[in-house]
Length: 531
Image (cartoon, rainbow, N blue to C red; front, side, top):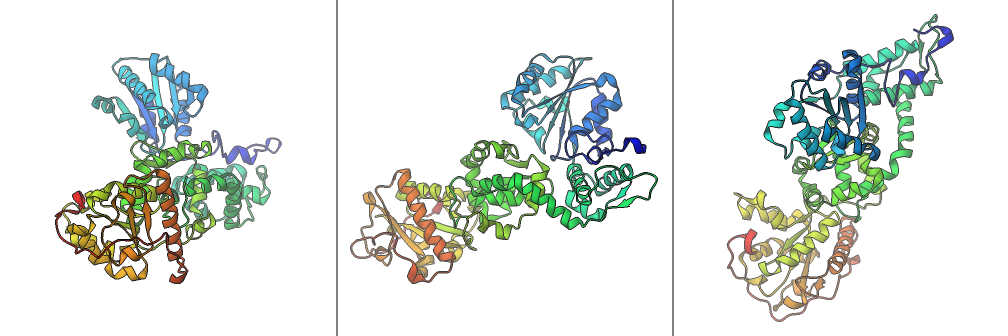
């Protein structure tokens, strides 16, 4: 303990940025890290969740190993450091080089670092050591596309969530140095979820709330901080809201938000908040959440998510998307903020309306000649965050399945609306006849919407040709037409899921026209190919 004339400040004990000199707790993998740093050859990848103490542990380990292990730290986020990182990759200068957030480096520089590590590994005493520090699965981005022998030349030290005992040890150390007692350790540990940084943040906030600025006199009994941890957490969240509220809203809404859409960007944030490792593999997460799979996979495949992150300088500081579709949070305080969002209310708070409880918002029914139009509609609707059944994107799930059993519930009740693209071939195809049998009973409900194009309008009459629908100028309409149709369909969906009276719903456009109904025939044998 320090003497009364040199009291230690709270900010020196519970550190929310920089190096925690007084409250350092070795992580479980600390011995493996020190052994890796002692080895003369090869490179090291230190990966794990943000805020878990990776860089702090590397710095402390190097100090303990000896003064000859002094290191230079370069951040991949710092544009001014990029040239020095390139020099490390190119010429392997003497010394230990810690490159933080290396997952932010461009692929070409990652490859150059991988080649440099292989070169160093083949030298008996290279004099240069490269330590790459990144988020979960960062090592995969280095190994991706690299030669197979890199794996034997690199040591990957994986940091996981710190155990509750380690977080409690950090709290105890701080209490000892300040001669205080922080109430409800269990609450602090639960809120921190293995993050040393979050534990530091909450303990610091508890001291702030109690009016403590420096250590309690050592010749007195430890001071119990008269604070309620729930209020401390609320205060921290209020402060974090000033920093994260707007950027969180921007990300969750996406580029083309539709009030009744599935809000795929919001779902990504929610999955991050509900996870334990602050990093999720979006393809797997989508498989586990079929109601949102279509809209989330769409923003991945079309690079909408990557562009959304990269296009906002505030978002890119907080969220990272890897080439393998791992979505990770860069700042543990942002995770803490996300975990306290009431997701049931948040949707409405940021401007979305009620959401359909059906598996899909829309299901497309069409014959082969209308496939291009169907694909355009699918793209326009999913860009707005709607869940759409389109056979083309579910072929992998339909393989080996009984197609009648698979398709029947989708058209009968699994989608809020069935979009029927009418054309001269529609009545002649086997699968369109099957789909028609499923949605036939829904036509009078107003949940089956006819769609047609001027260059292939239906040459027949049916119950649908008298219904309000959408007409396109051709089977290959301009993007503006498709977007306008998506807007109209989105409004129709919102009215439906808002439980308005059917009489309030007006036709989208004038009914289609055509002669007498045609008899549905059978010609195609598979839905996936020719519709």
